[in-house]
Length: 259
Ligand code: IPE
Ligand code: MG
Image (cartoon, rainbow, N blue to C red; front, side):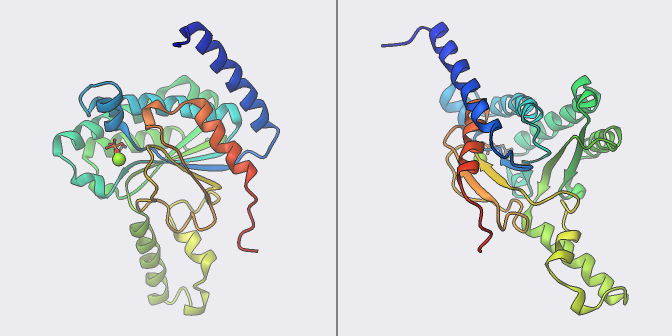
């Protein structure tokens, strides 16, 4: 039997509020990292629309996720928006996404909520790969929110985990060459301090949507001890209850850090 929408909505809201209470009674992960995957499949398979539309819907979803994070008081959020490898996609799609991101950075930087909740926006990734206009938008958003850290949002754009590690190694090697560092100074903490997310703790929870079970060169160094959570829903279809379930699963796991 098909449930009438009203009943379904009421049931959904009740479930969401029960889940939220449950989650709030436990430890909220400080840093959540998300691989937002499945935009194109959502547009095509679920809506029967052109794949490119999925990216617009994915962007709308992101706004909601920011609200959920503020609601639950998550401190840090890292989002895999566009990988180094994604630049190999059809130029039309790449341009579409670049423009969408550009628009989003301006919109976030000027939005009332971002200033009210003091959301700091930062971008990690290779800026040499950005079109000039995207770079401007990124710098605008970073500058406008540089004093905020109630919630810090790292957008990974043109990002690759291996490239991140290679950059850190290059910085450290230069210091060794210049006599500022000794070979024996090189340890895990030093590498962590040279990595792109050095000013925030490593992710507690890494979540990927769309049913793919892989890390795709995301925060490789940083996720050594993260809890991983994979869900089948496509990113634009991700709901608050899916997010809450991911956190509840995280809370049910016992982190032992190898001990
Ligand atoms: C994720 O969705 C967004 C980006 C990588 C830009 P996809 O574009 O990878 O969509 P699917 O995975 O092909 O459905
Ligand atoms: Mg994908």
